[in-house]
Amino acid sequence: MKRPIIATLLGLLVGARAPAAPPAPACTDKPHHQFDFWIGDWQVTAAGKPVGTNRIDALLDGCALLENWVGAGGVRGHSLNFYDPARGRWHQTWIDSTGSSLLLDGQFKDGKMVLSSAQPGQRAADRITWTPNADGSVRQLWEHTDDGGKSWSVAFDGLYRRAGK
View 1 (cartoon, rainbow, N blue to C red):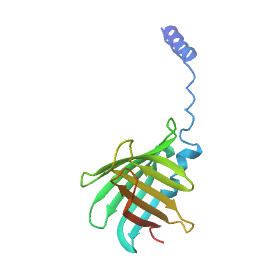
View 2 (cartoon, rainbow, N blue to C red):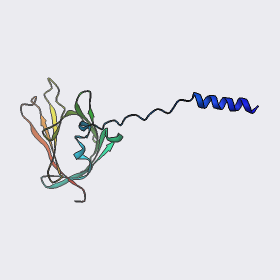
View 3 (cartoon, helix red, strand yellow):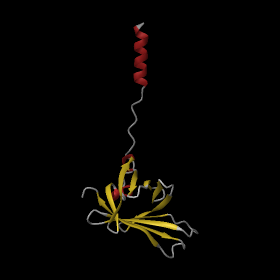
View 4 (cartoon, helix red, strand yellow):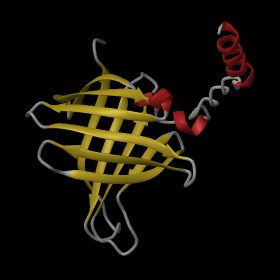
């Protein structure tokens, strides 16, 4: 009786396949990390006055960034940011506690991350530019147009400084 059990176990072991190699790490190339300067805990000011805090976390082994905004007036918001290699573009989806949302796309160019909601034929659009500064701070400039990009007005001009510094 012991022979059939041993033969069955040996058959299973011999027929078993070697474990598959783990997949190659995703999102390790340089474009996936162009927005890493924004990762961290931030105190945000506009015109020198506190306007909120923001925590940016890397997710999914560096494949995405999660933004966690808390405004001084109580509005909370989150965004998911990721690089899409098929399009060679960055994407941000934003939603906040007032129900407002933004869908932005763009690129890291000339040392700045520039994301926009502009679509062909659309008159109203938003454009947000994040600029890393030499002192480790980050400027976020949010602009809006209602005339198809002929003119832009400033919706928000904030300075991010690392919390605790």
